Amino acid sequence: MAHIVVVGAGIGGLSSALLLAADGHDVTVLERDGTAPVPPEDAWDAWERKGVNQFRLLHYFLPRFRLELERHLPGLLGELHAAGALRWNPFDGIPEEMTGGRRPGDDDHESVTGRRPVMEAVIARYADEAGGVTVRRGVGVTGLVPGPGTTTGVPHAAGVCTATGEQITADLVVDASGRRSALPGWLADIGARPPYEEMADSGFVYYGRHFRSPDGSLPAAFGPPLQPYGSYSVLALPADHGTWGVGLIASAKDPAVRRAKDLDRWEQVVRSSPLHAHWLDGEPLEDGVTVMAKIEDRLRRIVVDGSPVVTGVLPVADSWACTNPSVGRGASIGLLHAIALRDLLREGPIDDPRALAERWDEVTASTVEPWYRSTLAFDEHRLGEMEAEIAGGRYEPDDPAWELGHALQDAASRDPDCLRAMLDVANLLRTPEEVLADAPTLEKVIELGAGWRDEPALGPSRQELLALLG
Image (cartoon, rainbow, N blue to C red; front, side, top):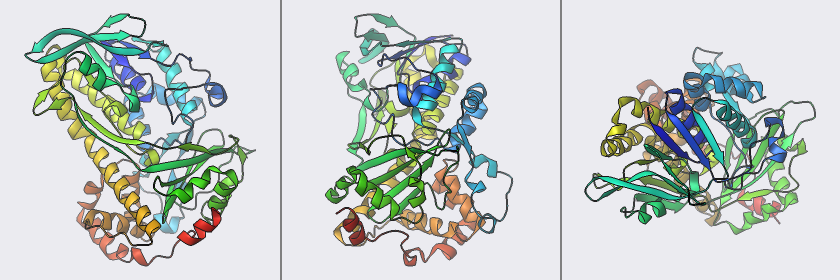
């Protein structure tokens, strides 16, 4: 078995470490943030993670995250339950006339979710107690230890260098340092070619707050967790211990909505939505509105033009690719990526670094990149819709997939099969392509969802929104 260094003790890094250690590898996790995790019940108030800018923003862990934990890390799932993570299934709140009654497979839509500090505190504690995992906090990685190259012109990483000058050697380095990964700089320092990167500002801004009920109950869900309203969207997410989050999502090119940083204006906008007004009826957990902007969509590959730019280091989870977090896919995609890495190392190519880098590129492209592309397409169209509304126009892209996506959402309110198909996509159980490849489903979507443009607006018009924002 190998000695593996994982850079980053976020959810993706700790998931990778736990899976690899369970296979017998000796895993050292290095985390730049020095603050040790606190008990889950204290995490919201007492744990700071300065390296994670979205640590206290709205989070939701999709059913796919729970399903994969159940299959691969059942002990961790049990700890999340014990710590009070919420088990939530949308079918419990949808009228039977829409669902057609419960069916086999509906339990796949059950999530185990909570606020990010609480969930991560449980995962951190579980990793600290796991055999084969050593977590070192307050250790910043500043670069890679160059080793003997395995291929002419391709540098090899034989470990990492820390901010204190320590060199930690390893058979493999896993970069799970997240959205702010410094991997390109590390590669340049050891003479590697730049990795392939796609990068752009996602174009969204988030304005969010958390609430708690006095009796542990949660607001009734009258619509989907993410509800579009013309030039903005509302996000309403249940969480642990009778808490929940509410957020407004707008285009960064919409200066009017920047006034939502003001608490009174933010509340006026949320209360204008009949589906979400009651989500404000709780005790606020923050004094004001939390804002997050300048979120990047970014994908990185270490195989360029058929050849790796480096061997001995592999990017995982958000270090590989990250997107707008409004659809809640980050943790699930990261866990799927970690499982793919565990499975790849079971094939045995760790002793052939070049083959390992090439296979990782192939595995990543087949297992998680389709989800990244699907998320990116959704985001691009949603941003286009927002900006057309701001300009007073109508968004009409020449993209049948966009048209069918809206038709599926509309048909979901009319047909139990379409409802389940829509939830499969939203909950990361099937891609849109897989759903619409089913001929009977596609036929229903086209028949029942063709009039989606004629559906009445559920929230304020653009002019009403501007008036609410003052």
